[in-house]
Image (tube, rainbow, N blue to C red; front, side, top):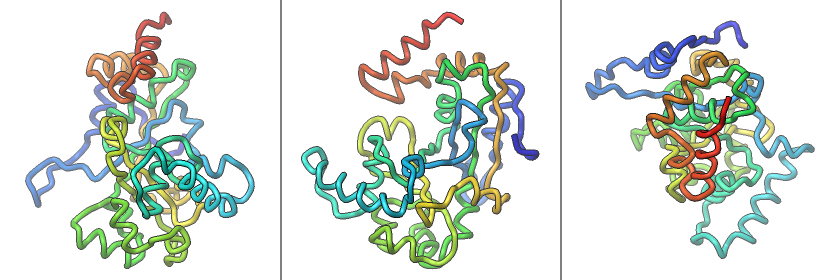
Length: 262
């Protein structure tokens, strides 16, 4: 754990920390600027992308992966020229990319932190990143697009308007993180309230970047001693695989875990 990690020793403490959102005076609503990433084990905290885990130089492999994915996947998807659409689609279906999975929902993040039966005896972790704060470190060309749209995260079309290629993004000045909301490709993305992060280089790690920009994030540790309480209350709230992974595989995963005997 990091020295500044917050430990939530109870369900009530966890909810208080996750939903600690003050009133936004500009709209008089409780609008959070945070996005969330749930991990079943605090030891999984290093943010290695699937692309990095392939080994070798990610810069050499990324272009080939995207090119071949586009070439062979064309029968299954609608035509689209945006590389960010293809990158989001590939990430969603398991392609190694520079993207990482996030969610706008604290409850969805809690699900992923408590869904793995083999990790229930380990402390879990929720990364909380303030996308409003990360905007301050974007290069001017990207921040101008968000300002013009009144947005905090990009769509594939918005990102394409500034950086139509991976090389164009990598060529922008500075080190930065982009949060990308994908198209509603299927019910899974919609139900998980999903979005992705991507770095300004395929070799850069988001956790390293966050460590140098401490105002942009918080981390909440879920002790193993409260994981089962969290898990059972999420089930009661219908935050389960049956909803987050629509289909028979999600239904089966939910039933297997629900009827597991400790």
